[in-house]
Length: 407
Image (tube, rainbow, N blue to C red; front, side, top):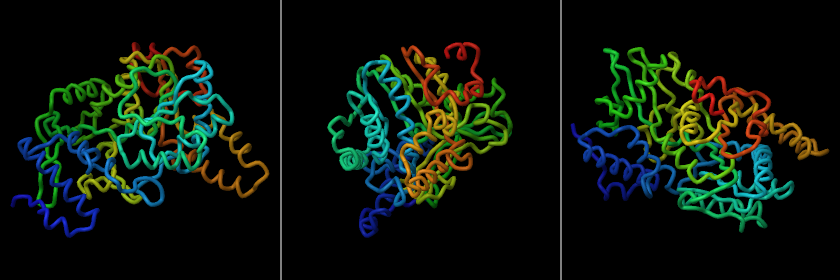
């Protein structure tokens, strides 16, 4: 039975969310047809999240906070931004100035709190640059910063593309998990198949096809390292990570890139027990693993292979300045002192800040699930940056001898 897409007359009678979902399903369905009935998962995820006017991240629905689908560290507590201020101060101080560039600034909470903290303790960046693909989120960010840091909003600039040259600090908080990925499966014969998307009676479904040469090369490399070998094993590979890292590194003359995201070093990411990969979807603060449910109305993510990120950074000429968990990083940035100074003698404020700190630090919450990697160029003391001194976990990345030497 052929897949039936809703007519425009039918979708016009639906509520906005249903209409949005139906229109994006129709767009993806046409893409599948034009591709001969099979679409790579990377392309499906790209359309589901970023199709102009319809993708999850570029449409107008609420994404962040209690009324959205998920919450990020800057919304949980101001402590997150206040701790990030420490390495920002160190880098801007060493450079004698420079900018901060935030990639995808969410609600604007991180920008507002970080600017406020740097204004109080110095030095402020020359500019606070925000690269934001969503017009709706960009407007929300302007409103947040204008409300919470009105004297500093004129220091902010929203960009449509990366700057040609840049010195300072780049912040990528929960950016890479939303990057489209390719999916693969090891079949019963031990060969690699690529998992893509086809139509089904209920919408879309997984289907396997001959693996592309680029994905095959990536999986072959994993297998030479002893991963992804058993029949039935499936996972993801982010083939966009190398080009993304090169694009971010290219304009960086001197400074630091901080990547904060949930993920694993490669030996943990591709361990045999994690045989179905890391793909997850989020809607109304609930997580599930069906990327074809409510397309356009839910987030789709995959964990970050931090070993792959470190390798890509080395290829782009960046030094590995540090790698650790979010908990270790925030402790290294002096979160206990930040809490004490912010709370003063107010027990209610102390209780509120302590509750936020638990969310950020506890292993069962964000403390161990989120990792932080520092990548630098031209910094004299990149191994001494705040945040990476409590526990250095770079050995867990299992980098090759050549890559390890690039530290």
